[in-house]
Image (cartoon, rainbow, N blue to C red; front, side, top):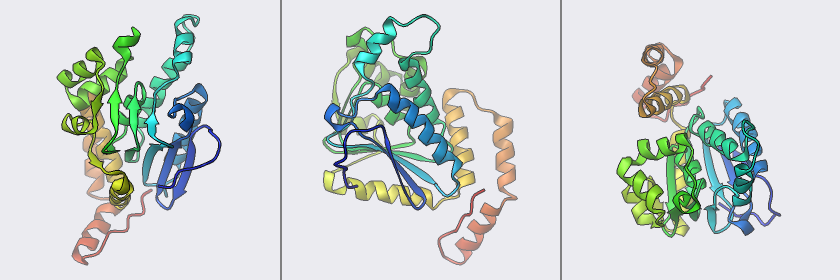
Length: 264
């Protein structure tokens, strides 16, 4: 993916056929997330989800890091904010949760290190492919910060309690191989093959049945959180047996060609 030379801005959206790419774009500050970025991300998520032609989202960063997480200056302001007011910190949690629950499949392209709250943004994606020199670091314990509950839940449900404890309580930095071993990364690649691996996965996801994927992603997320609406999941499964997607899938299988799913 070509990098931009434009001035630092809020996240940048690029649409290429069925694929949307959001790129965090403050490279001089390692793509540190500002309150304006949170507003922009929520708006972009809505635009992407509302466009049925978009089948997959890739989230990445500009420069040598994916993201240094939420701006610590704004985090300090949160500590002195008026009780009851929504802070930038709570807005960050809302963005991460919204990303996790997007209807379409999501890939985090980790072009470099991922730190602090950005580790949760990446974890909220369905897949994470990182360059083999990337690293991660969750400094909450060093900062005296009790991390927000949904972020801890994501760590535990995806990585297990022991790995979550190690990352949160020791605040130790880990490298790409360890990130892969504990399941944080879906895959790793050298820098010159990162785009190839991300493109291949994105193309595969974009070619699959969008309605079926949306329903199964929802069920998987609900299972992981212990909030499964079993009746709704069963209804989606029954509906899929009568839907246009399965008809096209069966015909394509018989004709030995790639299916052409129209979606909604």
